[in-house]
Amino acid sequence: MPANPTPAAPASPPRLGHALKPRQLIMMGLGSAIGAGLFLGSGVGVQLAGPAVLLSYLVAGALVIIVMNALGEMAANKPTSGAFSVYAADALGPTAGATVGWLWWVQLVIVIAAEAVGAAGLLATVWTGLSVPMAALAFMLFFTAINLLGVKNFGEFEFWFAILKVAAILGFIAIGAALLLGWLPDATSPGLSNFTGNGGFAPTGLAGVGAALLVVIFAFGGTEIVAVAAAETEDPERSIARAIRTVAWRILVFYIGSLSVIIAVVPWTSEALKSPFAAVLEAANIPGAGTAITLVAVIALLSALNANLYGASRMIFSLAQRREAPAVLGWADRRQVPVLAVLASVLFGFAATVMELVFPDRVLPVLLNIVGSTCLLVWTLSLLSQLVLRRRADRAGVALPFRMAAFPWLTALALAILALIFALLLYGDQTRLQFLSMVVLTLFIAGCSAAARRLRSQAG
Figure (cartoon, one colour):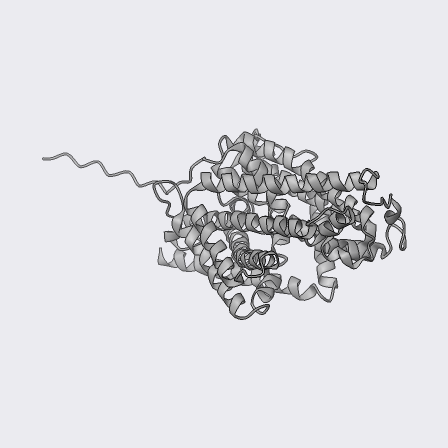
């Protein structure tokens, strides 16, 4: 009688590689926080709060540093492409994990379209003959190809994008310092009079600081992508800790340094703050200032598009592997690229880009208003997850590769800051709809996730 055949071992699920280098992870974290929100949007915060906008940036920066440390602690212990979605599932249950994952994915695919259209529009102001629709679609095609070529190529592109942005900021701070010190022959230094003139340091009071905080906080959105990328980095346990330590203080230096120069050179009442970096360079009599800053802003938007496409594809890939998204999206090719996840993530971007170009200023503003506050909810659930998982690890005596300092006090402080921001969103007439839209979207996703889970359970 023939022997019973040995049953075949079940196939292991597709896995992603570890082709990202630590230097790429560090620059990715730095570059993700340095975007168009700094180069073009920082002037709005100055106009709302005056020089006291620095307080808004300090509060927002402190919050981001705490969130990055909390995410770094969890990512070093469990590097996974699902990052905070997986950690929320581990700490708060599968519905919370699926909800935060889908919420982040929806946010990113909408933002991808906005960045393609925005970059094309900015570039058209420099090259007036450029077709905005064709440029936007070309950007989408190019970065889809970059992400399909593998994480190594993505990481190298993002590394050099970040280098260009950092170099631009360092050059800007150096020019601003030379202007203020009176070292530029064709420019007059205003000294520090703009910090106290025109109504004083806080001309609009605490209300202005709070209003500016709502503008400033969204400029830091995207830093959480470091936790997603950690899963594909060499030696993730050490790389994530190094990235967190180096990125956090550099973000504050670049943001506070840039804003200090802008406030010192340009009065907070000036209309020139619509393009604050260009205003400083023009005050320094730097030729071609407007064009240079426009091109830097285009690079910032394209860098964010590239990073967001990467992050979105990895999140939907992770959701699929956990049966929270169609299983086919959890497939990776022999180069360990989640091809279908990339295509699914960019598909909505193409559709939204086309709709925005056919119906200008009608589609994307509505979509962006709906997802505008979702990064705050992602941060909140990430902090709650860290609170639960850290206590669980401490009780079990688990030695974590990277431990956030001053636990749980810093986590509690960050949650308190987020509660304040949510209250400000709900209180403001212009932000209340955005907050309520986020709540409705979150409840909808959570309901769908729970219903899908029940159906799978009933189907066996």
